[in-house]
Length: 239
Ligand SMILES: Nc1ncnc2c1ncn2[C@@H]1O[C@H](COP(=O)(O)OP(=O)(O)OP(=O)(O)O)[C@@H](O)[C@H]1O
Ligand SMILES: [Mg+2]
Image (tube, rainbow, N blue to C red):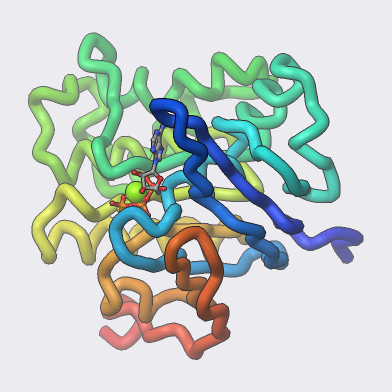
């Protein structure tokens, strides 16, 4: 049905100049991700995972190479075009939940929808998402009134409100204990499957990576492994 893979990465390099030294952070990365796939991006600290995720999401510019999202080469877009594409096509979840402290949970979730200029009933969507992440009763709470796990659930709901075709997550469970981390990951996978979103998740945790359809491993800015796998069943499924 789709003419293009959801994500196409072609010979991407990223070099930065730091104190007169050129540092090659990414050294020619290539892979394609079909729509709906869940990719775990792994590798040691400093291997380039966050840098790559930032490039894929259009938050930072490549040095050379191309990145296509749904067939659109994002390395050739103007800042304005890129901002629009980001707000409509892409969702993010970070390790630090990045909620706005002066907005309630529901207002935080609604914000990207309002910024994207999308039509429709954003409040209704926000409430549906609050229910989906199990926080239907917490919509009017401020981030400071929520636990870490609850804040990350709000961040998940916020990431999905614009119905992105791709969700990027950089160690989304990194600030949570293992029980809360597991819960967030299961929610993420569930919402993701329900909506057919492509998911690229950075994780250090081999157990969490076991839920993915595919593992891509970086070392020193290069892909050293790219393997399909049978994803582990969710606890919810086997229950
Ligand atoms: N702005 C920058 N200036 C200098 N070096 C940078 C910059 N951004 C990234 N780096 C370097 O690039 C390399 C890759 O960084 P990156 O944050 O992508 O790694 P990572 O795989 O996400 O690591 P971690 O698992 O610790 O989050 C590191 O050696 C880092 O120090
Ligand atoms: Mg990182």
